[in-house]
Image (cartoon, rainbow over all chains, first blue to last red; front, top):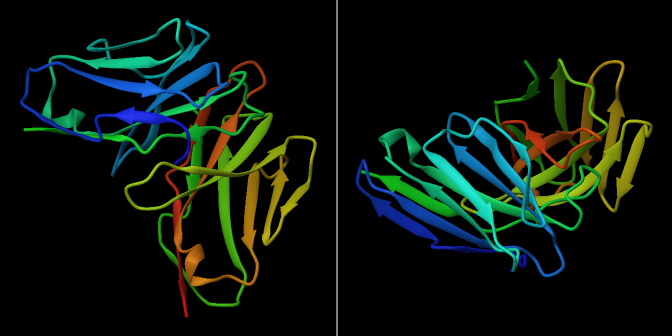
Length: 114
Length: 112
């Protein structure tokens, strides 16, 4: 157990639907990152939060949004889902949100859009 | 645009040998370079970090080198074991954000 908790582990939903992925960071970590991993794209950075504020943004689609709450957990919302959104979604956390820190990853949420 | 290249072909080696994985990058000047291990269906696990002003870093059987002139990092596992079989990812970071850009990874298979 890495200390980063992601729920649910698996999600199957239909095209056009909306889902919410949840992440609880490791105790003491203030920064949360979201990544999408598909077979052909590898790990793609979506967004980073630090202590409730957005710090960095990657190629996150407009249909996707995220937030970090006062208790530091984070949610990634995916809407108008398409078949191509099927992927593993990872959350990671670090203490200060800096590149000199290693990330602690969760075990991921596998999203299948049918 | 920023690009990270890792060998897409799997690396197969015999137990006890040294595995060497390569990470090349272009259009980027990272301040930090990290290596992660990922097992199938699991999240990546942090292994080592090396700074731009460091040439080499060691941790137990692992060694990482960082050549900012060649824009390359080498990751070595000495006395490799079947349990080392996994996909290894390199990741680059800059000094003004925590964002890491990951390579596609290289799969290592260590045969007994």
